[in-house]
Length: 128
Image (cartoon, rainbow, N blue to C red; front, side):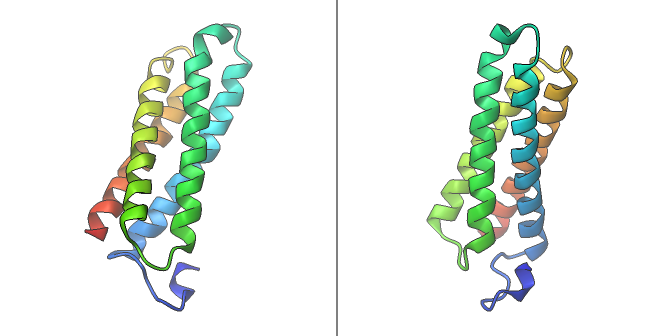
């Protein structure tokens, strides 16, 4: 789909754009699922910050994927959005990692957040 855009590839490396889109979509889904799983845990009070961080990260990742998939040109807004996504993913990975030894869903989420952070960083570097 990205290659069919009339403006052609928008990133220095279209493969990195595709990887970032995929990582953002996966991270959004995983963060939503982790928040839902946290809501089912017995120690819900201990997971309030994790749930909020999951939901913030999910929405930021989803917004990043949406903008990246339809933006024909890159610019300061795209870079700012990638930075915001990286910050959200870093915060969520850190928060989930604190619960990873007790909750497998948090370990999975932390891993997805780190993959997304890395994909966003690689794309940002390629955009110059």
